[in-house]
Image (tube, rainbow, N blue to C red; front, top):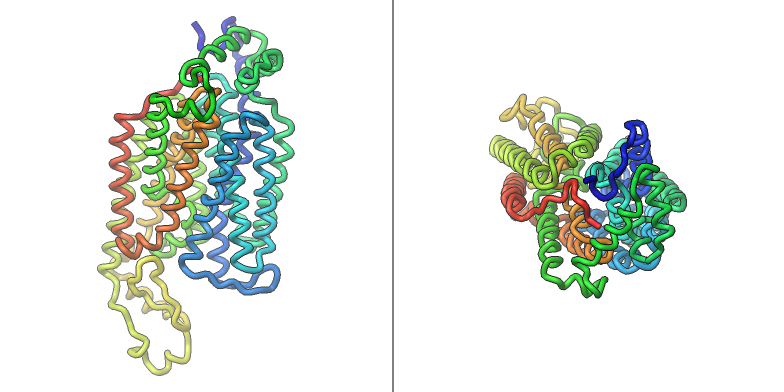
Length: 506
């Protein structure tokens, strides 16, 4: 017997491919909103890198950011996402999935314009808060919409598309930052957000939502368009209604979240988000250029960042093809095990590099002729291993400072590339998938918004405490800590993740 959403009658290969292609195209349209999320998260790399060279704004003012303000450029987005997530949990049930995506994207458009015109830190923070509202609302709306749209046999592929588009947004921003200053880049991101708003009006409404609203005629019409002429859409409609009577009971909505089965599923998803953030994921995404500069990457930091985000995009593309084959649990476990190995190797390299580094040089010990010019000294101070004192250090002195690990400069970039690739195969994508798949249509927006709310708190904590943990644990210790979290997360996933691949979800 075919799964709900699959064709009961004999279907030609060509018709099946056309049907799948139609569902994927619609999912890609909704996923464009997640591309704006990727651009939002990655944009601080361009800002902070440009400010080290020229801190002038488009309006002619000067920007000076303290270390905690640099962290804030990444973390404040996830503070702004909290009201967006909560509003999404309420509004998805009244406006529907499609219109909620359009409404949620509008504040982000305003946020990008504010950031582009930002003349001071306050304008940047306000703009980033508005971008965060869009990130929260669109992530819930788009994830819910894409989960409810496709056949069960390709749902894993479709549900990875938002992450794939988010990584494409990362790479897009990293690449354009080579030729555009941060404020012009913000205008480009605003244009992409405006395009997404237009596309939402071309998408059909989710059939599951229409069933929930008792608009059976419209639901049948959308299902017929999605499933093709060979499918028994009436049977799928009946099964959708029946499945939503389970976890939600007679009181669908927020009160249904207090049911024991629902609470347990929410706790599992929240734990996965905790593992995701404190194994370093968002820290590496938001601070890739700072980290690569601090560990002494063999490549220029701009090109290294593009390599990292390019590999991340490739990892998400592979995840699209593997999710339905390997399932959610195995994907997460595999990714976390390999991530832990990469983090331990990276921490070991940084530890050995710090041990081999020359002793700090005091300004008072410099020759007299150096005191009238600027140069850069290698000093062991955690995040930045280059401290500006005056003019450039000679090439021979730079080589002497790194002589202890000569020939091994490729290690940190290689470790980060491996980390970024494998995390996209599992822990990067699966928590977002399960946050939607674990719950039926009647409570999906509310349950997903609760999971995403906790995720935003966790990501904010991971980003805002980055500099503090770096100082307390040292760079090597921080990477080893991330590796320990990844190892614990792999064991947790083996025990507690319930497989949803290929199963109907209502």
